[in-house]
Image (cartoon, rainbow, N blue to C red):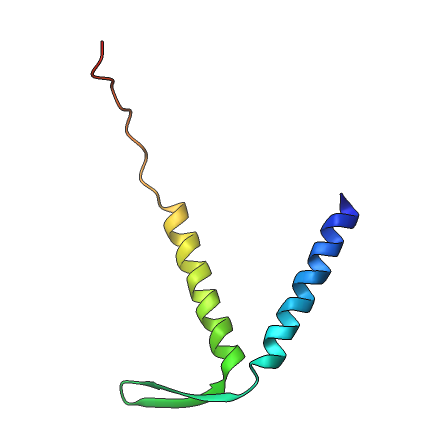
Length: 73
């Protein structure tokens, strides 16, 4: 099992490096009156990080589920 996890981790790492090298070009980001030039991979990483954080926040703050009472008694 450890060999499988190591192989998957290496493959995912290689895939991420491939994505990073293909997205090294610079892009201009404009938000309201603010303009910034950054690499595309940095922008992708920021968006993925924000999405991850929002997912964690919404997953941890679920309201307690109410018990459903069956109508068929």
